[in-house]
Image 1 (cartoon, rainbow, N blue to C red):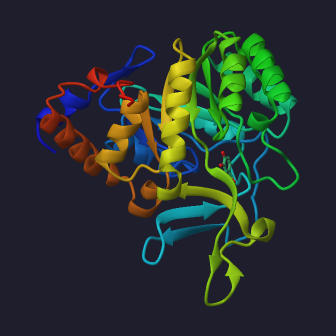
Image 2 (spheres, rainbow, N blue to C red):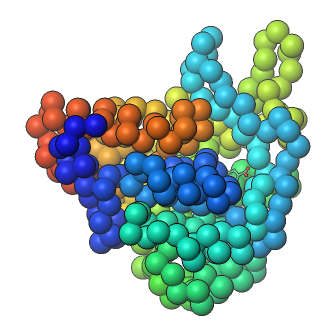
Amino acid sequence: MSNLTPHLLATQFLELPLNNPLMNASGVWCSVASQLEALTESAAGAMVSKSCTLQPRDGNPEPRYRVLDGENQPFGSINSMGLPNEGFNYYLRYAQRHDYEAKPLFISLSGLTLDDNLTMVDALKDAVLPALLEINLSCPNVPGKSQTGYDFEAMDMMLAEVSSGYQRGFGVKLPPYFDMAHFDEAAEILNRYPLVAFVTCINSIGNALAIDLDSETTLIKPKDGFGGLGGDFVLPTALANVNAFYRRCPEKAIIGCGGVKSGRDAFLHILAGATLVQIGTSLLEEGPGIFPRVQTELAAIMVKKGYQSVDEFRGKLKTL
Ligand code: DHB
C-alpha cells in the first residue's frame, strides 16, 4: 500500500475517526474471539460481530454455506447458516476487552423475539461500552421465522421499543427491497426514529436456490436448499438499496454491503451514498488480506480520478 493510502481513505462514521471505510459483513470472520482478534489486527477500518441470539445456537445442518466459484457462473455464495453463534454474553465479553483505539466495533443483535432483543439491548446499555449497536432486521435463515424488515408493523414496533430501551443512537441491518413503494415505506418508518443513526443495506437476497447440474442436487442442506445469496449477483441490488436509503434518510449514515470484491465495487457503494463498505463473501473466500488489496485498488481509482478523500464523492452519483 502506498503511503498516501491511509490519508486518502481516512474518514469518519458518526464522528468516529476511521483509517478507511472498509469492514467485514456480519457473519464473516466474526463468530469467535480468534476471528474478531484477527479483524482487529487487520487493515479493516471497523468491524462487526456475528449476529447473536440471547442463548448460544448450533445453527442449521451442514453443508450450509457454498461458494459459487465464478467458473461456469458468476462469483458468489449461498448460505443458510441459521444463526450459529456463541450467545450474546460471549460477544458482550469480547466487546468489554476490544481495542477501540484500533477501530470501532459494532455489535449485531438478532434476537429470536422482540423480548430477546430488548433483554440484550438492556444489558448492552448497562455495560456502557463504546461499541455501536446494530439490530439485524433481516436474518432470512431461521426455519419458520419471517424477516422483521419485511413486516413493516413489526419493524415499527421493534424500532419504537429499542429506541425507548436503549436511549442512544443505534443502527439497523435491512433486507433488500425491490419496490419503490417499499423503499418509501421503510424509509418513512426509519425516519420516525431519530435514534436510528445508521442503516446497513443490504443483507443477502433471501431464499435463493443454487443447484448442481451434474448431481441435480441443491448445494446446501437446510430449507430444501433455499438460502441467502451474496457476491456478484447482489451488487446492483445493494447499490440500489444504498442509494434509495441515502436519498430518503438524509439524517442517517448508510453502510453499504453486498457484492464487494474490489476497489471498484467499494467506490460504487460510496458513490451511491455509503459511508462504510462491508465485505462478506469475498472476505470469507480470501481472508482478511482482502482489506489492504481493496484499499489499494480504491485509492488507485481515487488518484486516477483526482479525488483526495472519500467524502468528496460520497453520494455524488449522477443520473441521466
Ligand atoms: C444468518 C444469516 C443472515 O443473513 C443474517 O443476517 C443473520 C444470520 C445466519 O443464517 O446465520
